[in-house]
Image 1 (spheres, rainbow, N blue to C red):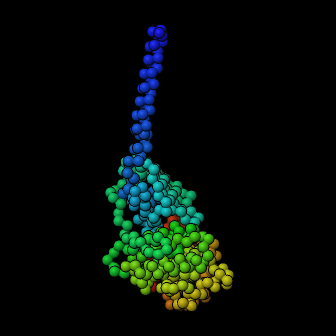
Image 2: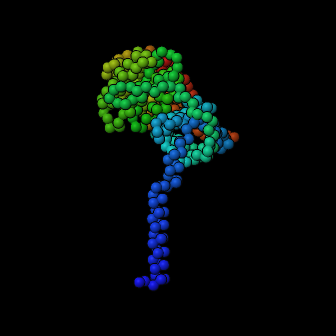
Image 3: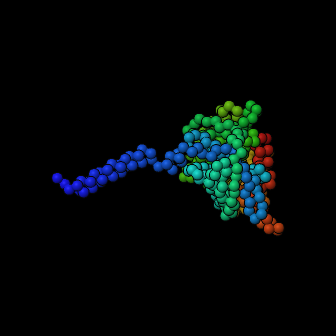
Length: 360
């Protein structure tokens, strides 16, 4: 028989063992309070407004944040004082309480990082090398997109953005987007769909030969022409930089596009001009746009080479936007009074593009 003091000690150890096991069981059943709370808190969807300020210059911002499927968000940013500068975020993520949005462009872009604080978002907007703090307030539910999303049949899962208006038919643009031009294509598709032009972005692989890319474009164009709400006689292509070669390749296929829009296509040698003769041969009107500060396109040389390749056909224009960056923006700068002049769309870019598309 054990001494009395040893018996009491063993009983105490056993008791603490049972308590410890019970605590472990409770912890295992309850999980981490923080992780459970993060999983049950809904994302901060809605319509947000507020300014950003840099060097004494204020710019209003609006954001529409929607949950399109469980856990998947989409965000649209607009600058009411600078129409045409808005964009749909190419990446949107939320891990409570942190929200992150991104629009990546070749040579720069916009990134937003914010923390949710009730009905407010507090964070930093980075625009190329510029940074501005902000506090945006939620002002109700997210506004309607201004367009409908319609699935397009074919070999790729494509989304046709169809203007949400009362018109029975709309012109349509098939945007052939390489990885480097995907953000620009998405921005144009969203803007055009809100202004009466249906649009679909066709993603191309950087490794695809022009002939393969051209076939993908022709397949998409044929599918878009069959969609309800699209004027089958007014469907054309868009291509930017080297993506212009994919547009030229697609123009050789059937069905023949009604028009083509080319942005910043480099045509520096006679050999590089050769693919673009197809538009003159097929009698396809072309709107060719260049930004004067686009060094990759070597604008003066390209304009001189491209004009004769396209010919003097009615409806074909080659235009250069003075002082514009490759994204067709006038860059931000400090004014003489020390205040900041925000970047803005090149004068005439959006109005001219819309008018030309609606006429062709």
